[in-house]
Length: 387
Ligand SMILES: Cc1ncc(COP(=O)(O)O)c(C=O)c1O
Image (cartoon, rainbow, N blue to C red; front, top):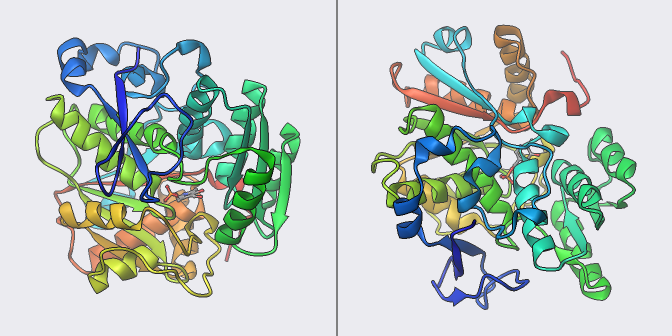
């Protein structure tokens, strides 16, 4: 069913066999899945796919799992694009939308990436996983591994939200609370993975989480009748969603599903940890580690990322930008959205609303543009800090 053909180094373009358990390229860079898109274009009818059940697997030919038997699912994907008819006009915007990934299983968009990665790794014979996580990805891995009957080891900062700790514990996964940040958790996870022979599904260090996340790009094109919005604002940590959507747009164009128009991609980060925004404005080719990273939006507290170069490419090629906002503005934006639209989003997603306000103030947005923000996680997973 999958048109997966091979893997490709995102830096050098070197080709790799896709039917092996593999993580990074020889250059130490993320591997990207490539598909036979000419065949897909000839055989797939984009609108017929929308008649299938409404989850991410309706695009299964463009996902990496070859045998449907291995698909591990809770029905992730297919979440709505909502028009923000109160908040938009309040901000002077006539076409403001939110794609609500907070409605996914385990309450965040991490479900999409982990559904793809666990399903494909399982098909390739992996039985034991390890993940460093700010919280939500660990909760998702724990759930998908449990559903597949496989073992998960989750390395999480000890100050992660209690619900993330609970959701991992509930599945019986092995939880290690780390005195440090996600990159410290990553170091310990990587060392233990070698000893234990576990498969490390760290962000962009295996090829398939980004494949699940790219489906958000397919879905939003479908929601806009195979056009794309003018601007997308995305809460950026490790960057899989940004990179995945950018990849989805290129695939869809190659198949003739969309034209060449691209949204201006905007990375929203917290000012206590904004390596992508800083690198963008400094004109750097890749990101530098952020010292003393600190923000209560835990998914944005990612001081080091292997996807820096790819994210910056997407921001620059799209003529987008990066915006950093304070935690105070994030809390205010979280309440503003809930009060104006009834949508209770994660702090990470609230950063996109705060960034939106900043871009309105800068007159970077036109009132008639179609602007889309992402809710990447449900606010129900967070301790409430009402002012
Ligand atoms: C709710 C939420 N939003 C955004 C992010 C950042 O996502 P990405 O790593 O794709 O940039 C995370 C990551 O933990 C998250 O949990």
